[in-house]
Image (cartoon, rainbow, N blue to C red; front, side):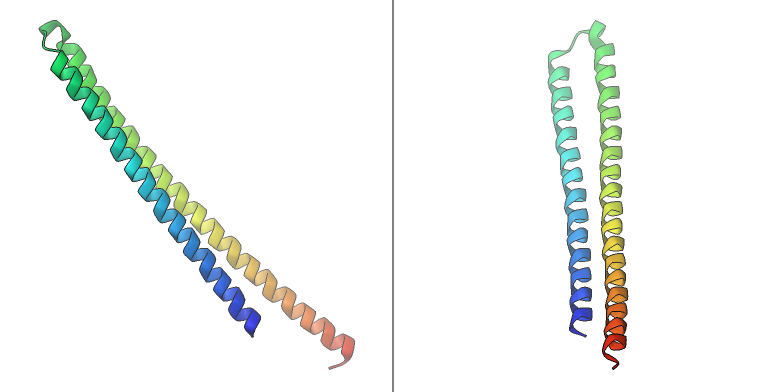
Length: 120
């Protein structure tokens, strides 16, 4: 019975660790995305301060477009990082559950073998 509890505890711990990893990866992706957007915004502002000439207005518009595109790309990267982290968490949890099932099956077969061997 103690091994069953240990296996369940180990499975619970593995799930908890994966949940923590998933959460931290999502947070990191979000923070990275926010920092990159801030940097792009700062660069855009500096460029706009320097640019005042009408002939360069197209460059300002292009900078705005690029900023918006960068934001979209960063949002997609954040989403994908969260998805990957979530999937990794699911796979690790599944692996831990499979390992626990294999352990239980092996335990049962071993017990049965010894009972037959010693006739009890």
